[in-house]
Image (cartoon, rainbow, N blue to C red; front, side, top):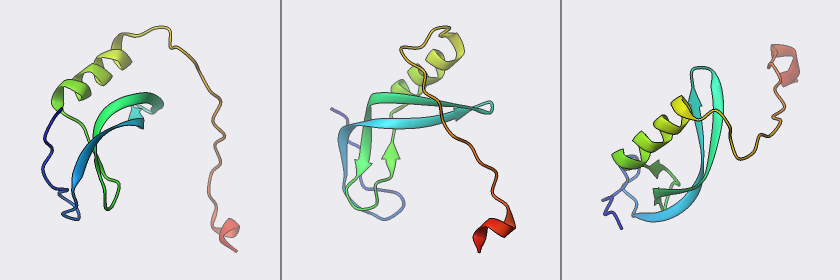
Length: 83
């Protein structure tokens, strides 16, 4: 278990947990589940240790087949839509 210290954004307590992580890389979105991460108990900010971040980047750069793929709706916001 890693000691994360306090949140650098709000000063809240950061505890280790397993989270779902959205990761954008070169215009693509990747979702990782069950990622060990520090999570601020006050604002929800997530922190990764270097080893975990390196593993995520390595998987993105080398993995040809993913466990599963999901369809994500995408829409372009236009000023007229804010009415």
